[in-house]
Image (cartoon, rainbow, N blue to C red; front, side, top):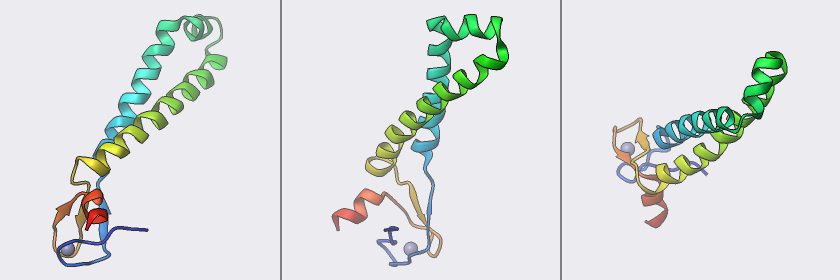
Length: 99
Ligand SMILES: [Zn+2]
């Protein structure tokens, strides 16, 4: 169910998803750095870069998913991550659920 504007009740809402995007980036970077620290992909990267790339990408995808999930919670609970396209009002999706 998409949220509606608490001010004008317009269904035309844009999700900003700052937390989700930033969380995903941090998660992907974190898992990339973790991969380099753990050594297995690093030795793979030197020995067989073509085989190592999918391993790195898979770890980064998992990291992104975890980070995005955390960021999504932050978006919902903390940030005003919804913007009404009709009146320009910014609000949190959690605030509309409580009304
Ligand atoms: Zn509105």
